[in-house]
Length: 528
Image 1 (spheres, rainbow, N blue to C red):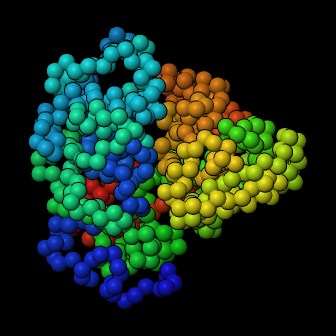
Image 2: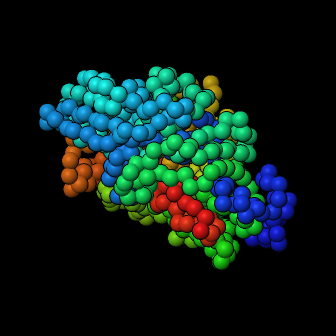
Image 3: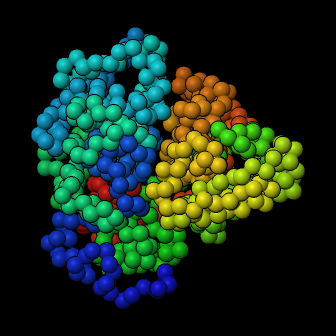
């Protein structure tokens, strides 16, 4: 079937629906949503997968949420008091929120959840180095005493992505985050229905009748009241884009999280559908190299590739020629970040010269080491980007070959620190939402703290020192100045290669009210 050849009617779409359209009564009660990927892990502290992050926002709440301007707004918290020149924070929880098992959300739950979150999250790890004490005062109040101020406290506790500080029942929060829990007892607007889960096909939720939403605040990103306005929510994983588009057009599903780029023209002109860009941060593509072993342990060799790198080559490989859908000349901070700048960008915006890159590779002392590029063939964007990356390596004179695998094999092998000859790897493509990369504080691939860094394990004391300064930088002008310093150092050390930024549209039946903006979450919508 050609992607732009749609069937008249919706029968036989193969996504597990029993009839072409929903009955009128069911349509008012059930929201059917096609997510970008299947939910494989239930514990939001166990993975950076966005399917799990979004599942978290349905089932749990954070102390604070972020609005569209990334300003923290109270969620579970009623408020806070800061004393002793920023070294003593006292938080008070709202009265009313309960977990799905009927138990109240207590300060003890918040304390245990923050402790677990600090073990995993980049903001949390920095907070932990300044934390002298955290304890509950009573069921609604808890305190954090710091050795030195942490100005990003509310931004950290309210972050929307990788990793949100969700508040779990204490018995779950005490579990090591390296051991994912498999039972969901949340406090959010939807209850997870474990008995109905069909891996690769269906995840179902039921509205939590006793949910206590934030009483006020702007409804955007994760701020303001989070409302479940349908009795039931179904996430219908549909990996075939044509099938997903047909289901949306026929009314078998209500909402498609990410429209395939080549199907935008068709859906855009369907009068029964609305298509819009809800997630303004887009997705950033990055090429990560393993700096534990040759050849990429050599910073001169890493820099040698820059004259041949064209971000446009990577973006067109996945998004086509429509420049509305992608951006090039992207540094370590994506478009939309308040600290994105042109500092150091001449490394990737100047005249492209493959022969200059070849000469630089030889001058860097490359000895012909094998470059093993992990290639997950079952994930389309990653696969296409990996093919372009492998071609780039080969054109500049590296002995590069792809290691084909499925996504599960990719995730397993990227954790290996062994040399290539012993089952390790040299390079892989990484995709993260722009929101996660907006500042040095939470940027996973900008950390360069050696063996504690994200897969690839770069080691750059200068980058780390600049990042540490960020947490003590208050006003925006000072942050922007420091951001320029960080980006210049980034292009010297190259913990990864930025490949560009692409934008995704979401589409839904026009019978739905407008969704909340900032992140694509099936909340606060109703049938009108």
